Length: 68
Image 1 (cartoon, helix red, strand yellow):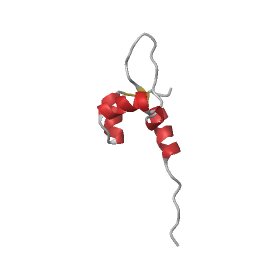
Image 2: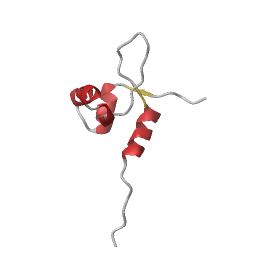
Image 3: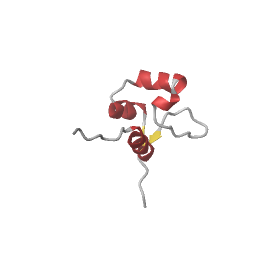
């Protein structure tokens, strides 16, 4: 069975090298600047699935161009 790894705000901040405050601001003003978050009904917890964050980072990666 696949283990689900959840990241909290501090985990995400550490991974992205950004402050938790900046991530919270971006959630409101520029949602595309942060990975899609997990909505847990009945809570206001900020959580991200590690696999979603990995996929978001891969999608944001620019293709490598060879220098000739």
